[in-house]
Length: 621
Image (cartoon, rainbow, N blue to C red):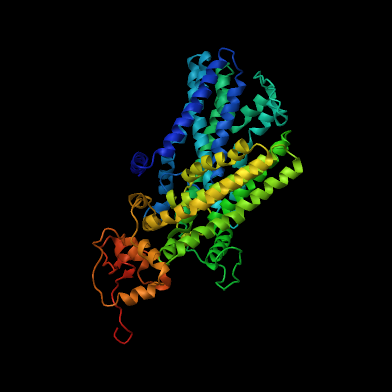
């Protein structure tokens, strides 16, 4: 079984998407080469070998804390959910799956980094090199299974009620350290940068304190380093064998924990999403300068951001991250940079909302089958984003400007306005262009489920909103000039982008819905520039008359033409608009599950009219 699973994973790695994996491989190998080069410089006395211990500790820390940065992302190529229900013993399957986790980009680049231990031990001779090779392999074994176990534990804890808040805090902490962790170092090197003084404090990379090196070597991430140094210096068998035995023992224990968590996941039956809130009519939201349709969309979006576990994580992390960044900046002498937390809040809000249509899933069929709904939906989502992220981020920048009296406050407020406009318009546009399809909203019941990986969209919106935040400060000059430029830029962006987003939804709506149903974005790419027959007639007829599902069935009575030969109509769309209980998209029937050819429904869409078989009256049936 292990051999078959290895072959399966190799096929998945060979035939799956390579963009993110190739980027990680190249970046990781570059960083590993820097660590190896540093280890070689220690032999010539250029730098102290304690810095290699620091680098290996940071590398090992990324294995331990890296899964917490994306707590909803399953790093396994072979998902455990695929094997649920198979007639195989859970423990046997989990043990076989465990060995496939050793194959991947992460173990490869970590092995390259740990080869620096061999470089450190090379002056000690052949015996020291052999011990260093064993230490590198044992350290790799521990890091892999420690990281996998942390990821599995995070996924298990995310199935609890406190999972949303816990995931948001973890994500926000990692993002804040990633984006603002350099500020203390920069404040130390440039203490008077806020006053225009660029005098640089020259750092010295001398010898690290011995107590600090001892602490790093005592950590599990430094046991391999300690064994290699002891073998090079001729410390005897004890200082070499004891760390190796500890690495192997702790790694085996971590692997056993991962197997136990995998067995628990395999034995857990799938749960259905059930609503715990009564469906009672509430008071409508009243907003100035908006139509009732747009206000209804805003009310729905505000409720969805609070209730959906996937969106809840994004909402909380998007607001916790700039606040934690402000705390990091406030701990230094760079108080003048605190208003920059406003543009950061707008930027993270844009990254949080970059996948809203894919998060809603197959509920998109209601918009496609309702005349005039797309325009109201786009504008309503933009207004909801402005209420959740845009206006609060502008207020945050203004308040921090008033508190700190920073000379960069005007530029920060202008940058926040421009970044909020770019995020409000660009996030929704990228939600149509680059959807990350995952578990459908009706089946999503806890934040640990795969709701799609929006990394591509987030990495696209980041370089779009960041220049927009910098542009007002560069062009405007004074604070009022920056604000004026930001307002003009926001008016231009918000005036043009909504129409483009609506047009793209009309063109790609059916392909997007096909991707939601099949959970495969290939359907969207194949229909990228094909205007769907479902959207065109309904949207063009929305100005003349209302065409609902009951009207479509009434007009189609008696018509028996089978339209499944028409390639322009995806079968999934016809299945969606087929009359079902509650007008919800149907699940695959028994025929689809066993591989038989089901009898397709008779559906035909021409000029906003559908042809479905006449059901007849109750007496006729």
